[in-house]
Length: 313
Image (cartoon, rainbow, N blue to C red; front, side, top):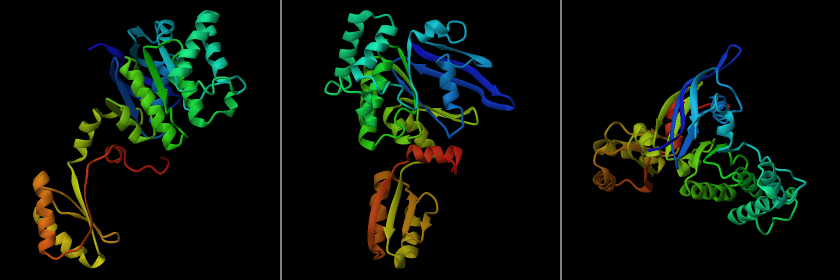
């Protein structure tokens, strides 16, 4: 398959600090790569180098087939970049913002107007097109910002925490918009602090910490590395010990017990058969079940397993 983004041994150093210590990335055309990591891991530094805004101190990278150091102008012609905050002029209308970008890209008056009209339609902003952006909601501003990145019809789109500060409904709307772009052939590199966002959007995930890649793979592959499905059973306080005892018979290893919440968690020996076995042993022991659920590993589990809890997020 064609590779839209290729990075080998990317390095960046600030005085005595290694912001990136040799990062490798490979992103297929028409796919989404989710770049995850704790604050300060090097995610934004990576994006800035791939977008030609920052010179690497080592390694090499190509975007849309062009070297980011030797051919930065060619790279810029083929990319779009949306940062953490909407880069739109609040005093202009939505339409004026898009037309201005079109004119700066030398589309001409008619070409810029036509492109703006098409993007306003695509991003469901027609009704608000001629209102000042200062009257827009946060979600509308983010959609307009994303639209402005697409005026040049880029092959590759960099999204650096694009939904920061948005409410859940606006976030989901933006996710759906990004998926449509990918369906149309756009390649996306996404950094995010929302793990469910990466789970929804990303075809591949790379986790970096302290400037180094510590894990990579498809979301489901990374989840399987954490462990298989686990059964969580909640019982009354008086039944915790009895429930843990009988559930140990059908568990792969010793169940974990949360005495305070009355929850016993265990990995089952035999998938669906194990679920039935667990229900039978609890019934035979006379344990009253408050809740009984199968829990699959999430990207939160993957993240915590890889980097551990961080007090600063």
